Length: 157
Image 1 (cartoon, rainbow, N blue to C red):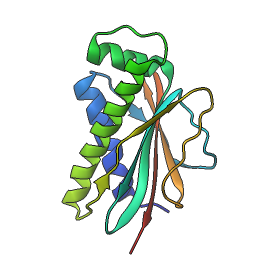
Image 2: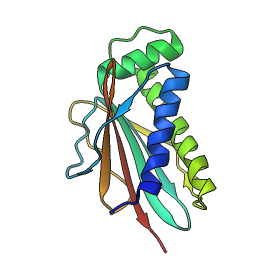
Image 3: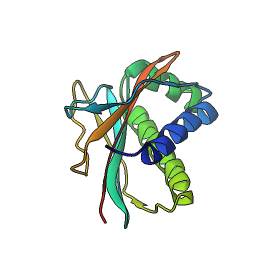
Image 4: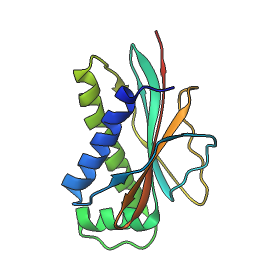
């Protein structure tokens, strides 16, 4: 099973990004092992990470209402469809959350490089993680809707 020391920095970073950048509070639900590659949100950002100790990927999948609210709060722009503005926003949020988690993990002696995030959208789109390890999914609730963090890592040494 993936250690909480790898998961908690992503949880803390995503929560921090949304509260500071969009003034949206998020409440984490119960983590579980995800059994399929089907996304639970309407638009997803996924980013690969690799270092000497671990390899894996992080994904964040937003329901439409919550990503629309985040986009409006961060850009002042009203959106009603998953368009280029929304997918760019998801990419930025993915980068910010991963960057924050990278800094927290570096404090614990874990160092890795980040790839460029890839955004995927559409009904029941797939999330393909870059590691063969288990995928942990963490649901989050906000006042605007739900989003989901997925983390998949393997130790490489």
